[in-house]
Length: 448
Ligand code: SF4
Image 1 (cartoon, helix red, strand yellow):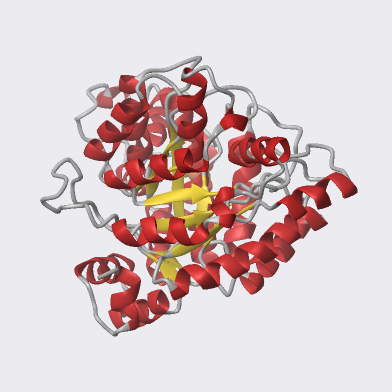
Image 2 (cartoon, helix red, strand yellow):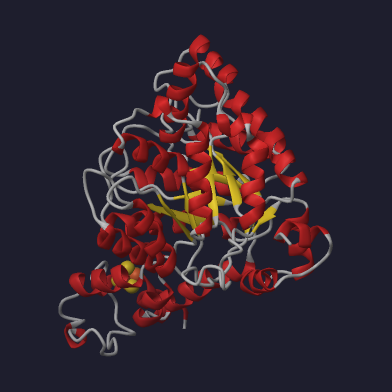
């Protein structure tokens, strides 16, 4: 029986129990959130089963209303760069940075092998975008994507599900009428979603409706077989802050809302994906419209990036937008790395992207009143006041970086800590920022 089916029947599963414990929420409340479609736990039913022994059990992650904001990291081979080993190292970097999920978006080398290895090695849920693999496999047969047979894409979805994918992005809400709307109104950056652009090419060339929309029931059948969570992609998401919240974007969202209802009726867990590039003052509107039209389905956003002029720093432009998005209702943030719009990220950029999104997620959690998240900030403030450097490093989102900066900028004081494993002897000592004018020390003396 599917997780959503069980939740609707009032049954509490071990995944629900684990998530409730991690999130410190009442398990019955969690079950009710799942039953109403406001929370999902992406967890392929092949995990831990004897059917496919290469799909390990993982720590389940709850995404949705009343839970902490989650972060996804995209990894995956490309034709131009990288290898399976590199992607596995990126997976480790993402987990080390605190990612709650990864998506394997491989389009290079052996895609099936890469996915299997990522799933076998990952301790967190794994997702994918099947249309990428569909396009790559056709190209390898020297066929353009426009020659795709609709069964090609369903075959990849089945294969990815069989291998243990927990969630897939499927651009089901992209329709011929949505494309027509886009053409009529015009945009600066027409379509920036890779999957959206691929399907648009196929639909326009063949003058046929999107197979993922037209044959949505077939998709639901596959999802039911594996308890696969659908992440309804936004093929027409804006790729420029000047394109955001336009009619094409909203038209697709209307369709997605209807598809959410159909997935829930079929007991298939479903999330909805959102923008993209949005001006800061429009983020709240975007989140509220999406939540309203999609009946409070968990909302998964890419960024949003709040300006288009910072290539090299788009982990920051997206963290700025991601914070407001999460405060306004987004439940799941897809990271953006410093190499966004420029090239494929390496391990270092993967970690930077994850940490930037974790900052956004945590900032939203404490703003939304999560007392357990806020406790970490309280402990950090106490450690700062006490000039307790070890504790500050320990509480950091990126302890390794905090420790390194402290060491590099305080060469004298930290000379005893050359050995990485040795205890930090500088507790109680000011850092090089204000030196003898350390406000913490001066105030401590004055207020004793
Ligand atoms: S020297 Fe300045 S920055 Fe460093 S601990 Fe004291 S107050 Fe903080």
